[in-house]
Image 1 (cartoon, rainbow, N blue to C red):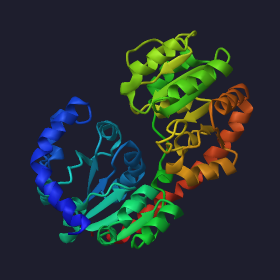
Image 2 (cartoon, rainbow, N blue to C red; image 1 turned 120 degrees about the horizontal axis):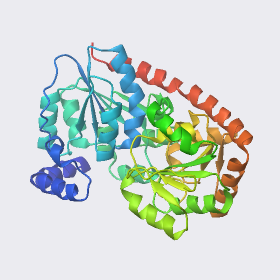
Image 3 (cartoon, one colour; image 1 turned 135 degrees about the vertical axis):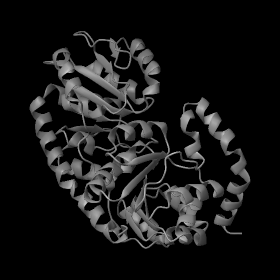
Length: 419
């Protein structure tokens, strides 16, 4: 039996357990209890008449990368319904605020045969667009069997995934051959995909198409007084272990009235972050609890969702999380670059390797290899606002040029869009 055959059999046998497994995930905060029916392919929203395009991004990063494309399609084709799915609670909360009027959000169904059948029978998509690397065999192959067009944009394949698929070459060819269009994120992923038998039409990094993150003008005005005259270092999308490193760099090198704004990737970690800051002897306030930002506050923990654009608007420099401790692969440096900000990053940037290479070559970013280098880079950019501005201007120019990726994505999808 092929690897895909084994997968279909396993998911068929395990499907009756899906409700129980989802309820357990609710207890860990990983599912929305009010919307578990969506995960089981039982939507309560009727399908609108007319053509429908389904776009899927697994988590926050992938969902953000799809937003410019979603907005462009909504503007160009108001006759077409856009169904957007994601797999995490955080991504759903973000999309609830950012999706254009008329777009429908649903949680992605679990990839079990009967669940997939219910989902596809209800929504009847004309085109499916998957972002990056999350491929679900039951959903994709059932859609293909029904004549649905399939596109994989910004396809990213790690060496580990490539090695795993290479052990089942027939199944890899079947899965990848189902797509009518594949655009790889970079030349490394392209080579891996082609080795596995995929036909790759070109390269496209969807994250380069992203527009500047939004921010609330009222909130910006509210923060104007307590941050006035304070050079601000923003630590964006941090992960466990990084908060302490960045806080230490700030404590060792920044001088009053500098302010560190810590924006954890997962706000639920805020209690632990606050406890660590107390141990480090840093005065801090938490945004989610309404603690005031005072003149003596050294660290502001922005444990909220969807406000990175607000704090980028106030910053002098940014440390991008997911890069300092290993195992994450970094987060999108174009997000601060759009605001004209210099970027400090660690060495773990596999998710955005080509983008970081370009930013480093342009003198718009600094890569550090440990605590000492982080201390030096943070001190240099906070003490030299002119250098920070010069680097930021180079970052902004690169980010604006990268927006051409959106035009490339729309052009590539055009032949697959429903009439």
